[in-house]
Amino acid sequence: MRGWLIAPIAVAAALLFARAVVPYVWVPNSIPGQAELSKQERFALLNEAVPRADPVAGRERVLRGFAMRETDGLARNERSGGTRLCQTLLANLLLNRETDRCNRILNELVVWGRAGSSWAGHPKGDYDFALIWLTALLYEFGEDEQVLYPETRNYLLNTLLTEEGRLNRMVPRSGGMVFETENHLLMREGSRYLKNQWLIRQGPVAARFDNDRNGLGEWLESYLNHLRLHGVYEFNSTPYAVYTLLPLMNLADYAESATVRRLAEAIIDNIARRYAYGSYRLRQCAPFRRQFKYADNESLLLNRMAPMIRSQLDGTTSGNDLLVFASTFHEYRLPLRTLERFSGKNREEYFVRFAHEADGGEEIYSGGPGYLLSAGGVYRGESAKVIARPIALLLEDDAEKLDDCIHIRGIGDWKQWNMTGVHRRLAVARGTLHLPAGIGGSIAPGWNAFRMNDEVSVACYQQGNLAMLVVLPASELALDDALQRIKAVNPNPEKTGRFFWPRELAPTDVRDMAFDIDAPHQLEAGWH
Image (tube, rainbow, N blue to C red; front, side):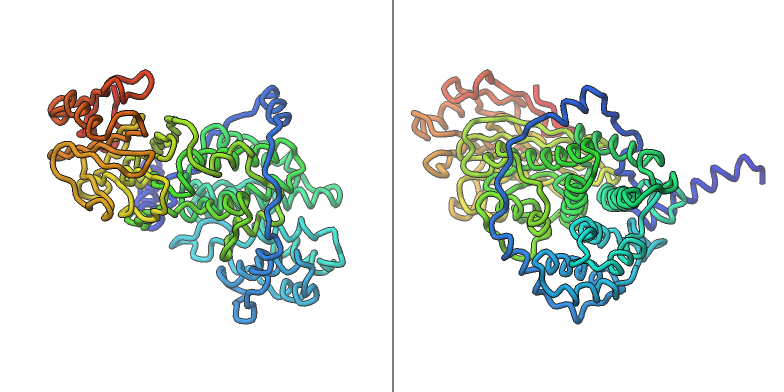
């Protein structure tokens, strides 16, 4: 066979193999080209003053919850046991508790796998889940020989912390053709960066360990800047968001580069800010990226940032939450302006759209006093990894599942949904309206209106495949009068493809909106 045929055939075979056995990592959700940071941007970033929340209350209670976990039955040579042991040992040392025993157990730990995504060709992956805690152990206690004994520190540094030297952006054993996923990149390369930094503190090292000479420092800065500007790839993701935030907290505390520290902090700030606008009372129904197994989950409590935010709001802590645990020894605190958005009712009306690149679509939210109308996004194909959700109306109540709130569910499988039809106080979709059992659970064809509470009423329309939801904040108009005015100018919206706002009810500067409920499901709905 001619040589020029061999390469393309080999690549094609590799692609088919990758799609068959590593589908969740085949789509490169790392960014091959990063965003450089100019000198002016760096100066502005590093000199930006951001007032932040107070330290987390209940620190000792949280640490004791982790420290008192049973360790005797945990395997030292596999992911679950080894990672859990790292967390438990760190908590004990932070409490200055059982130091001898902790050092002994640390010396019993073994490298049970390799960093990076696990898949059929790399079954012993995911060691970087332990690396983030081992890195914290090194930086919290590596210079205190009364806590981390010299022989333990050397074993930790030279054996357990496996990642060092130059950058590696690829999935292990993928032939250099598959970019690593975002959370693994941050866990693995962040840990590598911090180990290199520790080594160079000890004295001159080979160029491959110097982040300023091996390319890792330059790449990390530009990659973090890209995430700051464009948002994270694995947005609203369960469980991956946690494993994006934890290595960022490590970098924000331990990096000697002020630029890296501030970039890491700014990314967490941006993630929290989007969640602040896209949730109500720490409940959320929004599109997310990875994993498909959560597509049918009806919970409004999927976002794993909620416990950390609650702990910074009022000191409430429960369970063994990893982000709350990390907050007990990391310095990251939410910006006060963001924290205020979580601390009570929405105070003003807003309409926001957060874009996501690489086929991620966008998040769309219409909020106001006492409500949040949340778009569910759109499925954009298997490779985009985006899960569409229903359009939901969240109110000042205790609803924790979709069935407990008004929502619009698409027709058929969620992969056929286009749930992007949300504008200011208005939602339209090809789907079916669902009402909470408390107000009936079903809706008659045509226009209906319901008072949800003293602050918010809704007008609903269902005809054929058209579902429409109109949020009506408290006004001088009686609900029946408001409904009659809406009906008068919108007798058959399924025929006109347009919604007209009665003047007395319209949001500022909005009079009418055109819509297309049959817009291709791969695309965002186009409002006119």
